[in-house]
Image 1 (cartoon, chains in turn orange, purple):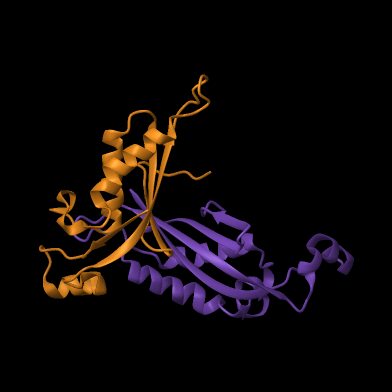
Image 2 (image 1 turned 90 degrees about the vertical axis):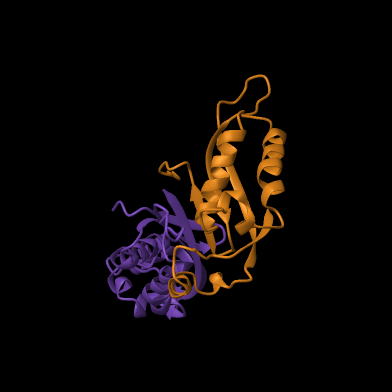
Length: 132
Length: 136
């Protein structure tokens, strides 16, 4: 879980377009969310440990690479969003790419990000997601 | 490809009854769900759409539009209704949660033009849900 602020606004769009597309999310002062992050990894169970990977390693990686970077920050000011709008779609793909680069002990399958209790986003590196 | 899930809640009543079964069969198969006076649930609906992120907007789909379509096509028709008597799909089909998920899919698939419907999940209670991927 992390909390961050953002403003949905694109300099490439006119004020009228920004307002039409982003509505109140385009408020110049920004607004915030409590984001709930779910990270899914896969791999063979190690016969010696009974684990796919050490959960502590995953915790530390997510803490260092994602939470330390984004928690209680303004996403618009983060380098990752210097050229893109920090929609939760884009945040989800950014987090996936960061973890993909930095977590080696198991395969990153999917990142799921809840923006509110009503809206959530999933990204699997561009792959189709099969729930069944 | 990014997947977006929007949740919604609605409350409705229903009962299970197949006129082709005898009264005894209906009671045996459907149990207390066969009570003709109906009973109700708080349904939670999860609609998942998929698509590429539009580089201009950062959106897969305009959530406001998705919400409007969901409200108009599903919630306005089903919230606080007796499904068997007020929702045309269930005049002839039994309003099980399975059939409800299919009905929601069919209502939305026709109207969603800018993103592809991936899954409809309907929770009848917090312990029971049905997923439909549009394959039937």
